[in-house]
Length: 604
Image (cartoon, rainbow, N blue to C red; front, side, top):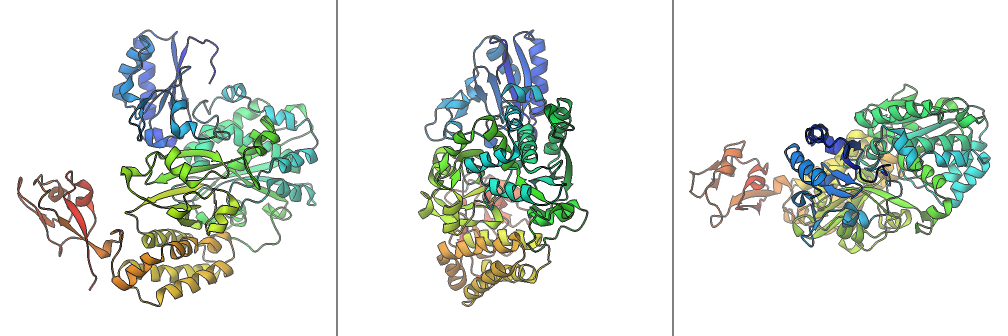
């Protein structure tokens, strides 16, 4: 963030959920106290930001205007940073980021590959402005897009969105401008705008982070959309499990009203619009738009058949336009900059950028933004820094529990709607989980199907019964009790669930199973016919043993074993009683000498 006094240093402390969980609030207080103690009140100030994206390196502190970033900072480190950096202009190198590939220290965040390999358009403000200070948002051009939009007729706004090529960032990728046009042309004077912030995919935190770090961008996009379709009321449906996102968005609503961007006669125009917050109870199915509207109306969150579509008969039977958090933020960016600039990024039929939560077995975990069409290889190896512990890349799961698992042969596949669909996966809302050689693909399919089966609303038979039947088969396979007919049954059930389910949850629930069957069928064969797990990841198909050549008798494994299955005295080689061992893996993870290893265990 630009400050008026170029000699004034600004200490920006990440206060997103991830960094707050690592006591960044205490770090902020310590900076404030130490700056006063050193008499630096006129030379440095402290402010906070939302998520900076590089979650694996948190808590993150950035000193501006130099752009120097400190990683994994602790309260105990603050005094040294204040004294050395702020007082004597000597940055503290030991807290810089260390590149995992070169081993070099990188002081400035803009020089870190995790950042400079991205194209941060929608995330451009995240980590650089105070999300609870509307003046910060205004200083970086906030609400300038709204001002431009209100100078044009609504039809022109819709045409601009069409020209930009913006497609919905919530999963389906439907053309946003066309969707808006349907709603604008629908009969009825009362219309609604909804922001779908019901982010429920395991490992996904894109929407939450944007709402925490740059809530006004989402609100500005909603206001522009409301003007385009003729809506006077808006609702954001956000998970109650996101208390910080809810707090900051509510605060954004209040300050936007105070500044004339929300409410009656916005910016002195004949246009009035307001937004309310609806907190969801955490049902995954409520991410489906008809189930979400039922929840808002006070009913059980069950989907309903379409047509009619929400654009003509949505919330309380009125025309309703629903878009995802990232779609609304993209709208604000388009009108702040230009549709031409947005359209110039990405690939044909997929303009702009894609935002992912990069998680799993990758060195650089975090929130990333790349042009549509970027390859999986670039995301994993250039931005993600490669596979954790330099193990072998095995697969990547895109689109969460509704997506698919893509193998090593797809590393150079572009990430966009059509390419993902052709591979059997989906873009989804932006989850990306990287897997290595130690991950079992059958177990992964079991994990995601367990999630979707539990989250099924139970309204339609294919989803309610079909996912349960598939799960029973997968459970049998990972326990070494699979039969030769199981793969045929799995594929038949998957087809039935996919074709017969009412909503997107059921229609996409088989994707993890189908893609692992397609690309990793040999692993299913090994589980069924050889009764073993090639990755040694399935609990019922392994047993733990101790390498006598490596064991130094430290007793750590014995002390941590919950079943007292490990015996041995200090300094002596230990042993595992396999009849007592429940294969929880605590000993394997805690052994400092890697003396504990996995053997195949054949079920009786």
